[in-house]
Length: 248
Length: 319
Ligand SMILES: Cc1cc2nc3c(=O)[nH]c(=O)nc-3n(C[C@H](O)[C@H](O)[C@H](O)COP(=O)(O)OP(=O)(O)OC[C@H]3O[C@@H](n4cnc5c(N)ncnc54)[C@H](O)[C@@H]3O)c2cc1C
Image (cartoon, rainbow over all chains, first blue to last red; front, top):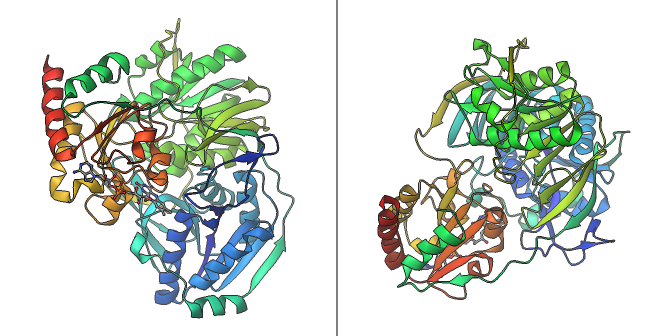
């Protein structure tokens, strides 16, 4: 079985979010980058399948050379090889087109992408890959089992879980549940050493075109100070929520 | 040209977001002078949509669509959009709508902006304000295709009545292509408000000490007709199901009122709940970062404050 895990290289969750160039670009100065958490849940699940089904796990990112440490980390976690499609994508549609073009050549059985990235929160790449390749698709995926050519998966829906079955090839939007937080693999020294020897191939981008572009960024307006209410005066809180905030 | 919304229903009733989409779609339709059409799937009574300014309802009623699958519902929306020459399609941020949106985008070769929080800044080109970095920032995105999809953040525009003079209703059919994907079963709590749909969300953190104390959160939520949520460590420790985990790596919350009990207010937690309109925190530690993000706060022990709050709210609700 051939598995592709699509990796997004995103700012660490504690990063200060600032913008430069007239508020038109994210300020990467001093920002630590990590594997997008949803992708990491997916990668861990893929590594389990590598161990159980001898699956070959490939990781891929669409991005510039700055993403390579993130790909090396995925190799240290256990992926067999990595691809970097060399471009600075403008939107999710372009990322999906690049990945789909690559997948057409490689014919993966299973494609895993995080259900959304924590930077642009687009939640579109996995679905668009599935749409472009006409593969089955399960997003917000909280469990996945593959037997031969057959998969069963669960999707988190509003207020519950939906269980589905389908044939491969399949694209999933990964999230927590697929594996738990405690299952995430922290690369050890051996993994890190091996990762240096594993193939990381840079491939040129195709002529995909974006369908949107970001003109500018802004931060939310600063918030007023909290109104503190005495623990003995809960009536006042209820009064404020009713008459001032008008939410109850 | 036309504006098409997909008006979601559940158990024969429109979801609140259907009315929000209609209200939002109406405003764009007025700006652009194009009709506002609503697609419904297996819904008999659609009269309610007239109240929010829908010009025409296109009903697709067919047993083939009895069960939601992303592929089939995306096909319905794409087909109706194509047939009606839609240039803007508006979808909600429900789990199902976010599931179908990228598929519709591919099938119509459309631009797609998710997490849109306001009416367009301009219609040509279609320029939209969206939240990003999990609510830590916004961006302005310009969509450059002829057909574009707006994914509207729940509760960002609100519901605005705007009765249509004469809403037309037609039936349409869409043929379904085959797929090997089958829904085996759905495990859904009935009669419980979900985080996505709730006006009020009550959330508990590690400050509650253990799962046995969750009756405090549940009782408070019940009093307010609220959904229950929790911080990440609470779900990681198995005190509560994952589906309740909110924040940057969990579910987003965009309710009118968010009440956090014994939650410290870590940056990753706040990121996910920040688009809630009014935030209340109860925390024993006056230095807890949540106080910087909240509108109202009580410094106090949850085990003393929450029972009183429940009692007083019950009295208030019944008065
Ligand atoms: C990559 C990453 C992603 C993350 N994503 C998320 C996410 O999506 N969502 C999320 O929630 N977290 C997330 N976190 C975790 C986050 O950093 C915090 O660890 C977490 O939010 C803390 O949860 P808590 O507030 O329940 O617990 P704590 O931080 O332990 O806070 C408990 C609070 O309860 C208060 N308390 C104690 N006793 C009482 C009492 N008797 N009455 C009232 N108050 C009391 C304490 O003063 C304290 O403020 C993420 C972390 C990382 C690294």
